[in-house]
Each structure stands twice: as C-alpha cells, then as structure tokens.
Length: 212
View 1 (cartoon, rainbow, N blue to C red):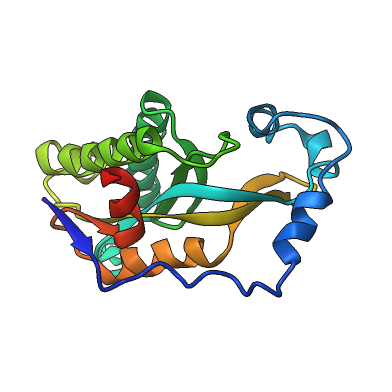
View 2: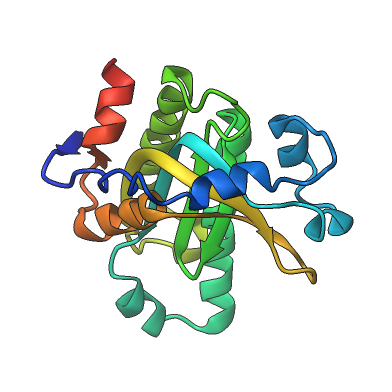
C-alpha cells in the first residue's frame, strides 16, 4: 500500500536574493572530479579536507525508522538490541547495493539513504523507481520474515520518500562522513515521523517526479 501525502508539500523555493547555493557552486574543490568520482571517494580520509560542499539540484530521499522503538528497546538487553539493529540495517545495506542507492547515515533506529547524487542534471524517474522498490522491499521483508534477533516480536517501520535539492559534503576529519543538508532533508524526516507503518508514504514532490 502506498499513500501519497499531498498535504505535506515540499518546502518553498529558496529566496531569490539568497546566493548561498551559488556560493557553494563556485567554491568547489580545485580538483576536477566528476560528481560520481567524488561520491566514490567519500570514504577517503584525505578527501575530508578537500571536499567542498556541493549543491545537488534534485535528489530522492528515503527515511525510515522503527515504530515504537522506545518501547521495544526498553524490553531488550543491549546485546540483543544491537543484534536486531545490525540485522535490520545489514538488510538495508544489501538493498542499497541491489537498487543503486547511496546510504547516507543511521541514527539510532533511523536509516537515511538517497539516489540521484551522481547525476549532474539531478534525480530521474529511474532513481525514484529504484528508491520506491527499496522502500517496498523493506516493508515486504519485515512483514514476511521479521527479524531473527527478535524471534516472534513484530517489527513495523515507517518509511517515507521525498524529492528536492540538497547540499552535500563530508563532515569532519576524523572518521569523516558524507552527509546531506537542507530543507528537503528536514522534510523527509518530518514526513516519516508523521506517517504510519502500513505502507510507504510519498510526498507530492516525489509523486510528481515518479509520474512525470
């Protein structure tokens, strides 16, 4: 089941007098790498000081987390909780590889990933399709087989999809990480938090890209 959250519109366009994004475009690293090459090198420590923030005109985002995680975790020992989260996110990592999705980060029980990062023109229908297939696979996996680490305990996840511009860059110099920033990242988080675990919630912006 896919529900479309038409009531949650994408954030309004940036102020035309705000030139912060243009500044980001013009202050990239002097090293001439394609967007795909930069993305492939995000785990290189020396890139942490050379990778300047970059404006991405259109990316598709997936955000998900476990419904009722606080109550679930309160009844589990730390080793068992670790096993459950590790099992869950390992499955998601496999799906990212299968559907050509870039994992961005995990925070607690939340998982954020994106597609279309390497395209100069921005995300396409193919990226939206791949992300939707991953979202449906997540729900299918939990509904059919659950998590081995939790035995018979049911796990339900809220999953949301959104589309919009973002700023990307590597944060920090020790264990540096690639991250996305901007109002549309906030929007997919809000969409996920307001959704339910009965299917996949998509924003009007994602719906427009997918059916355009």
